[in-house]
Image (cartoon, rainbow over all chains, first blue to last red; front, side, top):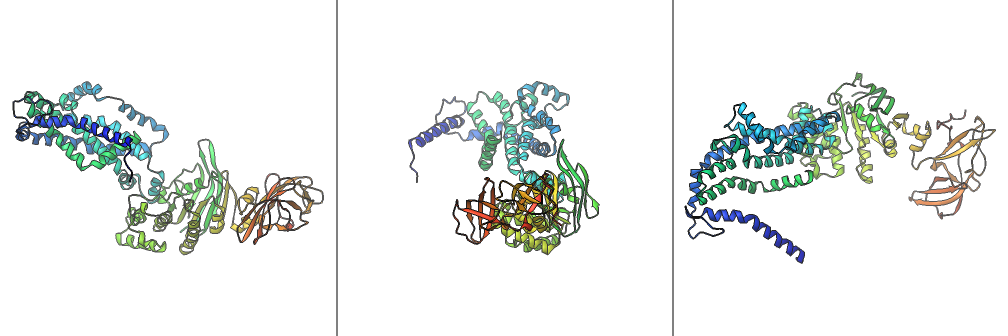
Length: 274
Length: 355
């Protein structure tokens, strides 16, 4: 066995410090969430009489069950369609286009340079003109569009790395382009599709700006967006606010714990290909 | 099952011609090897037959059907790739059966065909594995299995053995020969390895610079090369090529030769030509016309390969049978049968044999 050198000890120490710094706000939120109603919690202070009931109350007043449903509906509306379109477009751009049509891909890359915030005002008028304001579609449709540049870029990068021999082998085996795509390319793209799904899920779930601007009714928003309304309504009840925020966080954390390995893989993939 | 015909087939990449007009007839059941150095167009030609490359002009027919505009999947060909190109996410069983599945073959028939192919290739125990769990040789078998299970008219092999180690390559070569015997199918095989070409082929097609240099059986090519390129390419070690000049009376002279050589009577006077001598045809003889010093000795046990520097510093190779007690730097002289010497004119074409 290797003994720890001073360097590794320093490294470990730094990691622990970083971990504490990262976790501290959450711990402070937890301690505040457990404080008695009407008090103003002060920093990290474990309450003498932890009020676990605050969570139940926050769940009730924020109508978490409905928010959860609304968030899920939005995620279900955005992620599968985005992933499907991006996979097909990525395959097309990587394998089916000749040099003549390379510029098509550049159009998508150009989209990557566009910040969400820059398009939010025109988007508002667009959505209003479509009569979709205050519906979940006001979030779902723009998000699908806004995710396309990154998603297509991501999937194309994957398909570029699939050896061309496999395509040719499938063709000689009797596959049409369509069958080759579904039976050979998509199964091979599973890791890339999984990572893209996870990233899009995270971004949709945490989507704040779009819901706040385009949807008035908190019950039609994502959970993160609903938090804005919740804050306006209960801004003075700090323990309740903290309990509500933690509840909104919970699904993401739970999902992370389940798909830990895929999350890390998704980020690693970004490191290599991004 | 069918033969194959190519008629003035050409291929250009942009303005660059890669295949410069190839005519070829391949009979049903023949094992044909395309051989040549890298970049000679042999793989391109194979891919044009498979339908993976467009044909710029000319005509490719399989059987009696012109297939220029037929999709690869409808040409009745199967191909084994250099990289094997197995589907990594499928088991060996599914890899082999993929083509049948796409063709909608009933499950029972499919199963029987897959197991037959596995039996022929002795890989029944591998059917449940994934390609990643197989060795190079095993992957090669799977790739071949995938080809034979579809019972194509023509098998195409694109340097299938080049990723295997030397010992395995020898084994697989024999298996391919056996497979060809058993199936009796038309096979076209691309390689840069002339040993593979010599051992496997019924017919060798030597390509260079996108042009067919010569077509013939392995021994025809070895004994009667049509030009300098074929002479230098076929045979191992390579044929020795010496620049010579003809003299009156049909003898040739060269600074490399100790004395004028009387080879033929019908040679034109004072013409530059090339004399080709196979390393195996050289015999040690004290008064032989090729005199020099031993520079390098490779002892293989059954034979000894010598690199010899002639009087004018030209280097030649000689192969002597058995194990000779020679030393580096030792003077040596060779003789040969005049009938084994080949002459090529200054353009590299072979001079017709003496009447």
